[in-house]
Length: 148
Image (cartoon, rainbow, N blue to C red; front, top):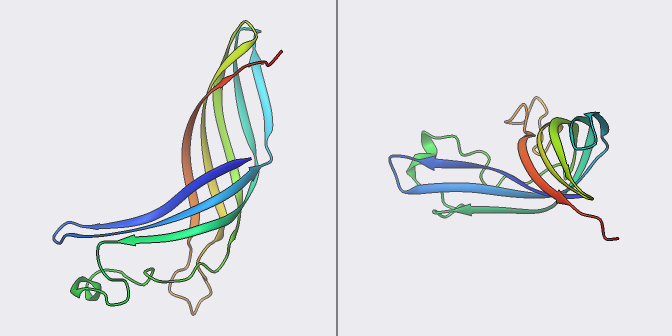
């Protein structure tokens, strides 16, 4: 149902170093849709679980990830080159929005928040990170039209 690109990144202000990691997911939300209003203007609330599957992972840096620069002694660099342990993501999402109907077509504006319950890095007590779940705030503007 959805394609989402998420990630993390670091920018080093004192040096010309940058790092980012892009995680691309296919996601499927299972939402309850509650709406109120009239035929022309109505508001709605969406709430429910969501699952996703990681389809690609890419690290982009301005330095060699195999031989970290001097900053790595004073800056957290454990996540560099760390493999993604869990490709399956799951969590809770919710949002609210408005719909404006114009004849048979509709304009929809929605804001949504996703709170991931699964972690993409290992998070046992012996592992470095205690949590690495996804969190997303999104805004969508849609135009829906009938084909008939």
